[in-house]
Length: 390
Ligand SMILES: [Zn+2]
Ligand SMILES: [Zn+2]
Image (cartoon, rainbow, N blue to C red; front, side):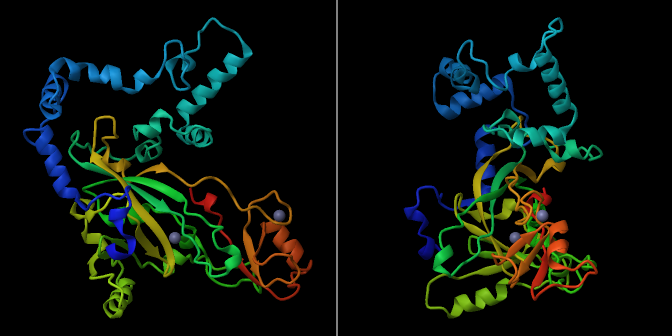
């Protein structure tokens, strides 16, 4: 594939890196052995050796180059303690409301996430240090399995929204590549854990035309019927074969690659459930692929690889950790322009657009008579808005 993508001409794509070798090299550089907990003065000594800088320069690095150095004296930073500390004796209505608001954010993790997701500036500290809304915070019963500090690597994976390959010139260029989700995974985790954390409406869709019987659509979702999927990473197809009925989607691609004249091989295949991220060789910034539901293709990009540090969550149950979830832009009903779409019709000659999106109420009122008879000829599919899955 290198001859197609030409990664050497793209500055944002790294050379191939082995996750395991990087981990071992970093550990060797920082620690005498992997399990040693290096803090304080010992860490300073290591840094002096590593950076080859004078002792006093390394000591001042943190104060002079840390995030706090970016805040000027007297500046009220949005997340600083100055904003969150409210004096007791003040009775101003605005401060009382603010106090209640801050209390609500502290006590309700979901509300806090809701608020911060809508901030214009989204790099609030929890996001940066990966300690924001974690799985363990939302699942209070999770068992705490502690990581040793810095005993693993952390990979940041960007999952892009699938883009329809439209041949019609009219629509070409309308859809752009968007990062839909960003997830942090540990080197010790398996690829299936990333797969299970990816949310896509293709998985929860209920396939089929229900225009003749819209009141009783089946409850079986696409993910219950079609469980196959694969990641393509650096010349290897990792197929999910946990279910005995799963298909290896890559077999046809590999057969085609052998016959095609373009140099895009050789490819190999492995089972997704057998591979850890630590086993991977990959290029950071390179567009790899995740395919599921037969044709739903997501580009995936490994954007960062680093050692875990003490500010990361030390609870293994927090990983895979969502760093970014989809923007909450829903498809609204094209009749009332208020409610979220629940149905989509195709070939409906009584509406100006094809496909046409309806909310539950408008769908039945517009397309069926009072006694439930279908008006006109069209196909109706259940529509699941992507805002409903996060
Ligand atoms: Zn998908
Ligand atoms: Zn409506």
